[in-house]
Image 1 (spheres, rainbow, N blue to C red):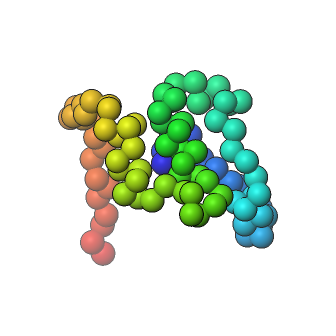
Image 2 (image 1 turned 45 degrees about the vertical axis):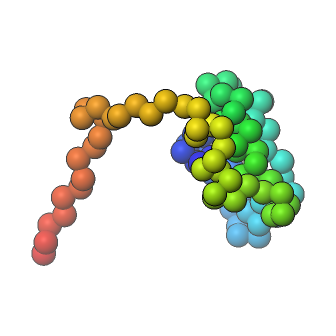
Length: 92
């Protein structure tokens, strides 16, 4: 979800160990980057719940689907101009 909203992963590193350390210890600040201004407080709360370090306090997939961010937002169908045609591959 973070990737969909932000366009990049929450933790980045040049080496696997660096990514693991950041995942375990780095904090995500959803207020400092201007890109988060367009995300509602409910959306930020959902992200914080999904990114909690303590797995016993982290939202489950079921919890996330029942979160107010999903339940209170109206569903708008995609226009036909929004969807991208699937890639066509050569069968050879």
